[in-house]
Length: 181
Ligand SMILES: Nc1nc2c(ncn2[C@@H]2O[C@H](COP(=O)(O)OP(=O)(O)OP(=O)(O)O)[C@@H](O)[C@H]2O)c(=O)[nH]1
Ligand SMILES: [Zn+2]
Image (cartoon, rainbow, N blue to C red):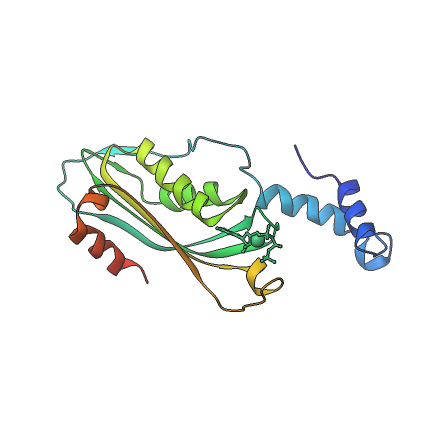
């Protein structure tokens, strides 16, 4: 399913503009293309683009910090964006490091709320890697709170999901939180 150029022309008309004026004539095609990228993984429930490796390790925590993401708030279809920090304590398997930002992109490229995005990343990482525990922290700015409505530029929202040992071990959770900038 894709946005059509006609959908965009209808929206432009509805906001009181003329979709056929010179400045807007190519806009519907651009918006269709942009939406295909921004909403690329809408409706997908399973992340498949990963590789696992069997490794003998007693690593306490693998952390990939400050992964930038862009998503769209499902209430207003306005951007929310920021950084994600993902951690897990491996058992015998580790995931290819680059696959963690890929997982974040996959989860973000759909309409969502920040809490749901945090949970989706934790759910998929837990499913993919057999880990002792998983932790995901997101810090984000919501354009729906900054450029309209309550109009509070610069506010940040943080969300965190912990699973397994990150939930039961307060010290480990604290170490994770120290990795979050
Ligand atoms: N929990 C949560 N709320 C969000 C998120 N993104 C947007 N919202 C909130 O969704 C709510 C929608 O509230 P409504 O009262 O239905 O919509 P609204 O009249 O546009 O609300 P205002 O934004 O307060 O003007 C607002 O409070 C938003 O701040 C998110 O990621 N998580
Ligand atoms: Zn919103």
